[in-house]
Length: 101
Image (cartoon, rainbow, N blue to C red):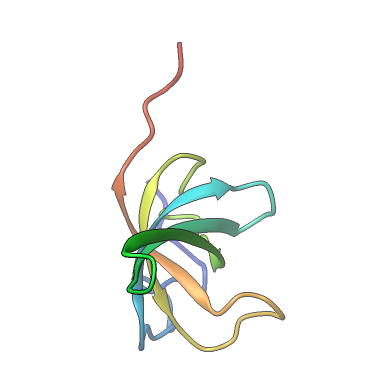
């Protein structure tokens, strides 16, 4: 098994994770070394006495040693700016998506 040679890997590279750590679901893994993570937020609206559900999408770097796929629940950590839209990196996969039969 080969080791990870990605410089932007939080485990094997030199990239430091600091700031927010977010749990979300991978919605898209089409770009190379990038995943789109969606997290859902639930907020209480006092005026209407109800809860409002909203979601936000985060672009995160996907190192080759982790290699998260669509449908996986992942933990992403905030880091320095990696590109125009990426400033998060996938730290670990919490649950894997089962293969569809």
